[in-house]
Length: 117
Image (cartoon, rainbow, N blue to C red; front, side, top):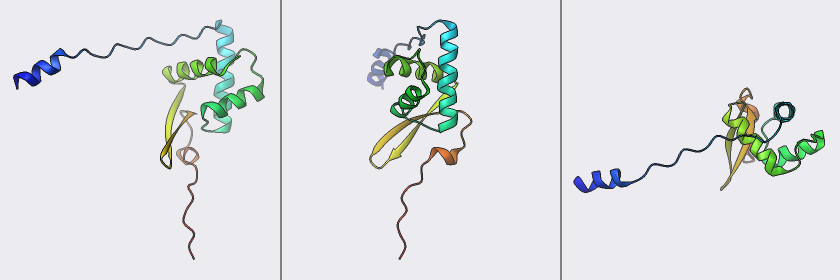
């Protein structure tokens, strides 16, 4: 029992994650977050790649790279403007971003059902 207590007391806790701070001017930040939120609200749960395609189609000039968009998505998730869901597709996982008010039926895509003879 003593060795178990020493083992747990001897481990260090994980360091706290630093808050994400987007490096845009406030007016740019508002424009970007509104555009991303509207895209996700209109087109349902999207992966990062699908969101990037929609942002490029929408013509958001302030986002110049997918990495910047990922930072914005993480910041919006941290601020509870978006949520991230995990969708198991076979043996793989697919992470999707969505708004908080998306209906659960729209989140889970229709799985292929066995054909009845």
